[in-house]
Length: 280
Image 1 (cartoon, rainbow, N blue to C red):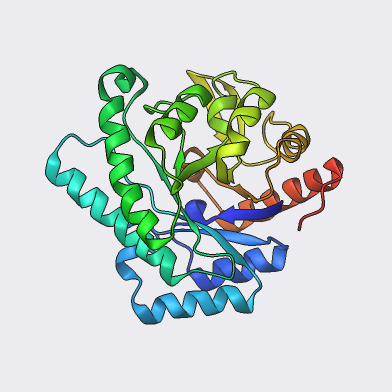
Image 2 (cartoon, helix red, strand yellow; image 1 turned 60 degrees about the vertical axis):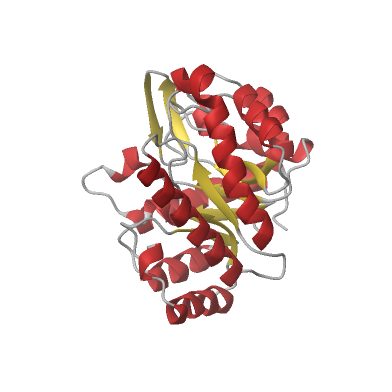
Protein backbone atom coordinates (compact mmCIF):
# COMPACT_ATOMS: atom_id res chain seq x y z
CA UNK A 1 0.00 0.00 0.00
CA UNK A 2 0.97 3.62 -0.49
CA UNK A 3 0.05 6.90 1.16
CA UNK A 4 -1.76 9.68 -0.68
CA UNK A 5 -3.51 12.98 -0.03
CA UNK A 6 -6.60 14.36 -1.74
CA UNK A 7 -6.69 17.98 -2.83
CA UNK A 8 -10.36 18.00 -1.79
CA UNK A 9 -9.11 19.81 1.30
CA UNK A 10 -7.08 22.38 -0.67
CA UNK A 11 -9.57 24.09 -3.00
CA UNK A 12 -7.82 27.48 -3.08
CA UNK A 13 -4.18 26.35 -3.05
CA UNK A 14 -2.30 26.55 -6.38
CA UNK A 15 -1.34 23.16 -7.76
CA UNK A 16 2.40 23.87 -7.78
CA UNK A 17 2.31 24.70 -4.07
CA UNK A 18 0.27 21.57 -3.36
CA UNK A 19 2.65 19.30 -5.22
CA UNK A 20 5.79 20.78 -3.66
CA UNK A 21 4.35 20.50 -0.16
CA UNK A 22 3.03 16.96 -0.46
CA UNK A 23 6.21 15.71 -2.10
CA UNK A 24 8.35 17.39 0.53
CA UNK A 25 6.39 15.72 3.30
CA UNK A 26 6.88 12.30 1.76
CA UNK A 27 3.47 11.41 0.33
CA UNK A 28 3.58 8.81 -2.44
CA UNK A 29 0.72 10.23 -4.47
CA UNK A 30 -2.08 12.73 -4.77
CA UNK A 31 -5.74 12.59 -5.74
CA UNK A 32 -6.51 15.72 -7.75
CA UNK A 33 -9.95 17.28 -7.30
CA UNK A 34 -11.43 18.91 -10.40
CA UNK A 35 -14.64 20.42 -9.02
CA UNK A 36 -15.48 23.92 -10.19
CA UNK A 37 -14.38 25.72 -6.99
CA UNK A 38 -10.87 24.22 -7.05
CA UNK A 39 -7.73 25.67 -8.59
CA UNK A 40 -7.61 22.53 -10.72
CA UNK A 41 -11.23 22.86 -11.89
CA UNK A 42 -12.02 20.78 -14.94
CA UNK A 43 -13.15 23.91 -16.79
CA UNK A 44 -9.73 25.52 -16.38
CA UNK A 45 -7.62 22.59 -17.53
CA UNK A 46 -6.46 23.46 -21.03
CA UNK A 47 -4.26 21.03 -22.92
CA UNK A 48 -1.18 22.98 -21.87
CA UNK A 49 -2.26 23.04 -18.22
CA UNK A 50 -2.88 19.28 -18.26
CA UNK A 51 0.63 18.66 -19.58
CA UNK A 52 2.15 21.04 -17.03
CA UNK A 53 0.41 19.30 -14.13
CA UNK A 54 1.47 15.88 -15.34
CA UNK A 55 5.07 17.05 -15.68
CA UNK A 56 4.89 18.64 -12.21
CA UNK A 57 3.78 15.36 -10.67
CA UNK A 58 6.54 13.45 -12.44
CA UNK A 59 9.16 15.99 -11.41
CA UNK A 60 8.18 15.57 -7.76
CA UNK A 61 7.72 11.78 -7.92
CA UNK A 62 4.04 11.86 -6.99
CA UNK A 63 1.74 9.26 -8.46
CA UNK A 64 -1.83 10.08 -9.50
CA UNK A 65 -4.04 7.18 -8.37
CA UNK A 66 -7.36 9.01 -8.63
CA UNK A 67 -9.26 12.09 -9.73
CA UNK A 68 -12.09 13.40 -7.56
CA UNK A 69 -14.79 14.34 -10.04
CA UNK A 70 -17.93 14.02 -7.95
CA UNK A 71 -21.29 14.50 -9.64
CA UNK A 72 -24.77 13.47 -8.55
CA UNK A 73 -26.19 10.48 -10.38
CA UNK A 74 -29.61 10.90 -8.76
CA UNK A 75 -30.85 14.22 -10.18
CA UNK A 76 -34.39 13.68 -11.44
CA UNK A 77 -34.30 16.70 -13.75
CA UNK A 78 -33.31 15.29 -17.14
CA UNK A 79 -31.34 18.37 -18.18
CA UNK A 80 -29.39 18.43 -14.93
CA UNK A 81 -28.65 14.73 -15.20
CA UNK A 82 -27.45 15.16 -18.79
CA UNK A 83 -25.10 17.93 -17.65
CA UNK A 84 -23.79 15.80 -14.79
CA UNK A 85 -23.21 12.83 -17.06
CA UNK A 86 -21.44 15.05 -19.61
CA UNK A 87 -19.14 16.37 -16.90
CA UNK A 88 -18.39 12.85 -15.70
CA UNK A 89 -17.49 11.81 -19.25
CA UNK A 90 -15.20 14.84 -19.55
CA UNK A 91 -13.49 13.76 -16.34
CA UNK A 92 -13.04 10.28 -17.79
CA UNK A 93 -11.36 11.89 -20.80
CA UNK A 94 -9.07 13.77 -18.40
CA UNK A 95 -8.08 10.47 -16.80
CA UNK A 96 -7.04 9.21 -20.23
CA UNK A 97 -4.91 12.33 -20.73
CA UNK A 98 -3.28 11.75 -17.34
CA UNK A 99 -2.70 8.01 -17.72
CA UNK A 100 0.51 6.68 -16.22
CA UNK A 101 2.47 3.43 -16.58
CA UNK A 102 -0.29 1.56 -14.72
CA UNK A 103 -3.08 3.10 -16.77
CA UNK A 104 -5.45 6.00 -16.12
CA UNK A 105 -6.28 7.17 -12.61
CA UNK A 106 -9.68 6.08 -11.34
CA UNK A 107 -12.54 8.57 -11.22
CA UNK A 108 -14.04 8.97 -7.76
CA UNK A 109 -17.65 10.05 -7.46
CA UNK A 110 -20.46 9.79 -4.97
CA UNK A 111 -23.95 8.75 -6.07
CA UNK A 112 -26.09 11.34 -4.32
CA UNK A 113 -29.63 10.74 -3.20
CA UNK A 114 -30.72 9.75 0.30
CA UNK A 115 -30.98 6.46 2.22
CA UNK A 116 -34.77 6.49 1.92
CA UNK A 117 -34.44 6.47 -1.89
CA UNK A 118 -33.12 2.92 -1.85
CA UNK A 119 -36.35 1.04 -2.56
CA UNK A 120 -37.85 3.49 -5.04
CA UNK A 121 -34.80 4.73 -6.96
CA UNK A 122 -32.25 1.91 -6.94
CA UNK A 123 -33.16 0.83 -10.47
CA UNK A 124 -32.61 4.37 -11.73
CA UNK A 125 -29.23 4.57 -9.99
CA UNK A 126 -28.07 1.26 -11.46
CA UNK A 127 -29.13 2.29 -14.96
CA UNK A 128 -27.31 5.61 -14.67
CA UNK A 129 -24.12 4.01 -13.39
CA UNK A 130 -24.29 1.51 -16.25
CA UNK A 131 -24.68 4.39 -18.70
CA UNK A 132 -21.54 6.06 -17.36
CA UNK A 133 -19.72 2.73 -17.14
CA UNK A 134 -20.28 2.04 -20.82
CA UNK A 135 -18.31 5.16 -21.72
CA UNK A 136 -15.67 4.54 -19.05
CA UNK A 137 -15.10 1.01 -20.30
CA UNK A 138 -14.65 2.27 -23.87
CA UNK A 139 -11.87 4.55 -22.59
CA UNK A 140 -10.19 2.03 -20.30
CA UNK A 141 -11.10 4.01 -17.16
CA UNK A 142 -12.60 2.83 -13.86
CA UNK A 143 -15.32 4.76 -12.05
CA UNK A 144 -15.01 4.30 -8.28
CA UNK A 145 -18.33 4.90 -6.53
CA UNK A 146 -17.99 6.21 -2.99
CA UNK A 147 -20.57 5.12 -0.39
CA UNK A 148 -21.46 8.10 1.77
CA UNK A 149 -23.32 8.60 5.01
CA UNK A 150 -26.70 10.14 4.21
CA UNK A 151 -26.69 9.06 0.55
CA UNK A 152 -28.57 6.30 -1.26
CA UNK A 153 -25.47 4.07 -0.92
CA UNK A 154 -24.71 4.29 2.78
CA UNK A 155 -23.81 0.78 3.99
CA UNK A 156 -21.39 -1.95 2.93
CA UNK A 157 -24.27 -4.24 1.95
CA UNK A 158 -25.89 -1.61 -0.22
CA UNK A 159 -22.53 -0.94 -1.84
CA UNK A 160 -21.94 -4.57 -2.75
CA UNK A 161 -25.51 -4.84 -4.06
CA UNK A 162 -25.04 -1.85 -6.38
CA UNK A 163 -21.73 -3.18 -7.71
CA UNK A 164 -23.32 -6.60 -8.29
CA UNK A 165 -26.31 -5.18 -10.12
CA UNK A 166 -24.25 -2.81 -12.27
CA UNK A 167 -22.12 -5.76 -13.33
CA UNK A 168 -19.33 -3.81 -15.05
CA UNK A 169 -15.58 -4.23 -14.77
CA UNK A 170 -15.38 -0.45 -15.23
CA UNK A 171 -17.10 0.18 -11.89
CA UNK A 172 -15.49 -0.35 -8.49
CA UNK A 173 -15.55 1.25 -5.05
CA UNK A 174 -13.84 4.28 -3.60
CA UNK A 175 -13.80 2.98 -0.02
CA UNK A 176 -14.05 5.81 2.51
CA UNK A 177 -14.33 3.90 5.77
CA UNK A 178 -15.15 7.03 7.78
CA UNK A 179 -18.72 6.97 6.52
CA UNK A 180 -19.22 3.54 8.03
CA UNK A 181 -17.33 4.36 11.22
CA UNK A 182 -19.79 7.14 12.05
CA UNK A 183 -22.66 4.70 11.52
CA UNK A 184 -21.20 2.38 14.15
CA UNK A 185 -20.05 -0.24 11.65
CA UNK A 186 -16.79 -1.89 12.74
CA UNK A 187 -13.54 -1.86 10.81
CA UNK A 188 -13.48 -5.58 10.11
CA UNK A 189 -17.06 -5.67 8.85
CA UNK A 190 -16.64 -2.87 6.33
CA UNK A 191 -13.13 -3.85 5.25
CA UNK A 192 -13.98 -7.51 4.72
CA UNK A 193 -16.85 -6.55 2.41
CA UNK A 194 -15.36 -3.62 0.53
CA UNK A 195 -11.57 -4.02 0.37
CA UNK A 196 -11.95 -6.67 -2.38
CA UNK A 197 -14.03 -4.20 -4.43
CA UNK A 198 -11.94 -1.10 -3.76
CA UNK A 199 -9.78 0.59 -6.36
CA UNK A 200 -9.08 3.61 -4.18
CA UNK A 201 -9.71 4.77 -0.61
CA UNK A 202 -10.23 7.78 1.60
CA UNK A 203 -9.47 8.09 5.29
CA UNK A 204 -10.05 10.92 7.72
CA UNK A 205 -10.73 10.97 11.44
CA UNK A 206 -14.02 11.19 13.24
CA UNK A 207 -15.79 11.37 16.56
CA UNK A 208 -19.30 10.22 17.48
CA UNK A 209 -22.06 8.34 15.70
CA UNK A 210 -24.87 9.53 13.42
CA UNK A 211 -26.59 11.90 13.95
CA UNK A 212 -24.13 13.37 16.46
CA UNK A 213 -20.78 13.02 14.72
CA UNK A 214 -18.02 15.11 13.21
CA UNK A 215 -15.27 14.42 10.73
CA UNK A 216 -11.80 15.50 11.88
CA UNK A 217 -8.17 15.76 10.82
CA UNK A 218 -6.20 12.52 11.27
CA UNK A 219 -4.94 12.39 14.83
CA UNK A 220 -7.81 14.41 16.31
CA UNK A 221 -10.33 11.61 16.71
CA UNK A 222 -10.95 8.01 17.61
CA UNK A 223 -10.08 6.05 14.48
CA UNK A 224 -7.61 3.17 14.87
CA UNK A 225 -5.47 3.54 11.75
CA UNK A 226 -3.16 0.68 12.69
CA UNK A 227 -6.03 -1.80 13.00
CA UNK A 228 -7.48 -0.47 9.75
CA UNK A 229 -4.21 -0.82 7.81
CA UNK A 230 -3.65 -4.33 9.09
CA UNK A 231 -7.20 -5.29 8.11
CA UNK A 232 -6.82 -3.80 4.63
CA UNK A 233 -3.58 -5.71 4.14
CA UNK A 234 -5.14 -8.93 5.42
CA UNK A 235 -8.00 -8.59 2.94
CA UNK A 236 -5.66 -8.10 0.00
CA UNK A 237 -5.81 -4.37 -0.68
CA UNK A 238 -2.58 -3.10 -2.27
CA UNK A 239 -3.48 0.37 -3.52
CA UNK A 240 -3.42 3.89 -2.11
CA UNK A 241 -4.60 4.92 1.32
CA UNK A 242 -5.54 8.53 0.57
CA UNK A 243 -6.36 11.08 3.24
CA UNK A 244 -9.30 13.40 2.62
CA UNK A 245 -10.04 16.50 4.69
CA UNK A 246 -13.78 16.98 5.05
CA UNK A 247 -15.85 20.10 4.47
CA UNK A 248 -16.52 20.11 8.23
CA UNK A 249 -12.83 20.78 8.85
CA UNK A 250 -12.53 23.23 5.97
CA UNK A 251 -15.23 25.41 7.54
CA UNK A 252 -13.00 26.10 10.54
CA UNK A 253 -11.77 29.66 11.03
CA UNK A 254 -8.88 29.82 10.54
CA UNK A 255 -8.18 26.81 8.34
CA UNK A 256 -4.62 26.12 7.18
CA UNK A 257 -4.67 23.40 4.51
CA UNK A 258 -0.91 22.92 4.24
CA UNK A 259 -0.53 22.57 8.02
CA UNK A 260 -3.39 20.07 8.01
CA UNK A 261 -1.60 18.06 5.31
CA UNK A 262 1.54 18.05 7.45
CA UNK A 263 -0.31 16.72 10.49
CA UNK A 264 -2.06 14.14 8.32
CA UNK A 265 1.22 12.85 6.95
CA UNK A 266 2.81 12.56 10.38
CA UNK A 267 -0.14 10.60 11.79
CA UNK A 268 -0.59 8.24 8.85
CA UNK A 269 3.10 7.61 8.19
CA UNK A 270 3.46 6.67 11.86
CA UNK A 271 0.46 4.35 11.56
CA UNK A 272 2.11 2.55 8.64
CA UNK A 273 5.25 2.15 10.75
CA UNK A 274 3.31 0.95 13.80
CA UNK A 275 1.41 -1.54 11.65
CA UNK A 276 4.67 -2.89 10.26
CA UNK A 277 3.53 -2.21 6.68
CA UNK A 278 6.00 -1.02 4.09
CA UNK A 279 4.81 1.55 1.56
CA UNK A 280 5.53 0.07 -1.84
